[in-house]
Image 1 (tube, rainbow, N blue to C red):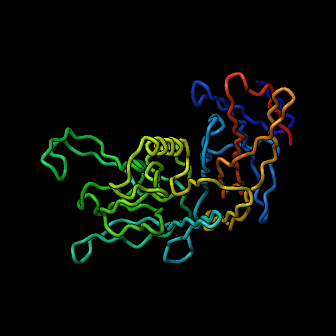
Image 2 (image 1 turned 180 degrees about the vertical axis):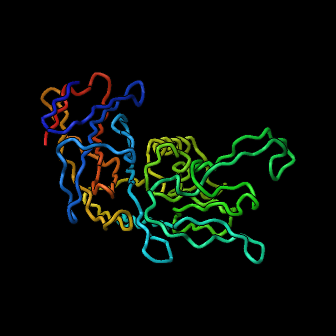
Image 3 (image 1 turned 180 degrees about the horizontal axis):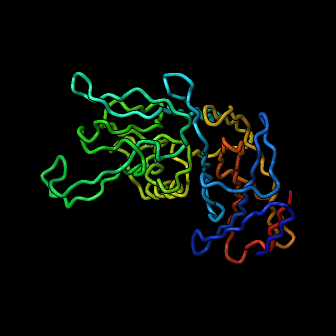
Length: 333
């Protein structure tokens, strides 16, 4: 299997096996564009990668769905209340964040805990370290709420161990900080609320944040629904697929097609609008005299609101049986 690349881009050939009889291959390419007005201008030269960029997904021969992420800073308002709304619209789907200046839990006149007014801020980065989560040290003794002994150790919020706002008890929460980033439909009301961490940044290490969305679109209705081997296999396949992604589960879509409108408001200095572009590459498999074009799928979309750039990764996947691998893969534009 040889690859002939006639383009100025750097596609990657990735291969794997589905079974003893079936193999899979993919040509994967990342294309970057600059946002100019409401259109995208393709960047043909090298671009420096940022620590906030998504991880490399070109090494995976199989991929399903599209991760959508964004990076940048949320700029603070000039007057109170010091809260900024961030909205990410992907086609007909909209995800919203509320971004607060620093807050802490205050004791109310009735003895409960209430969030303080948000403080003024210049900018807050789009980072899961500013979203709900965190960890604390549990001393040796009884496991809270049970009569079971516990050796002690670090207790982490399973969806985001590096975040803010996860506390063992009310006393620990007094004067302690709240997260800066929250999903607008899961705002904290009590010190012991445990919402889904809200952030649009890539989070390849937060696998549990994606796995909680496995089966959300097609949940198990009740005990009368048989858990068949086919169902289990499909569920396991979906879980594996989600584990490969790098967006939080609420930003992983089954499929996004070129032409899908994207709008990002509240991140960076300007509103970002564009439509997902077509891939510039054409991939053709050649077996003897036979030629087959492979359609692309969009694997990931990342918007950098600081650089005003958009990265789209396209995968051209194909399957073949032993002895029927393409002799050549032709790539042109």
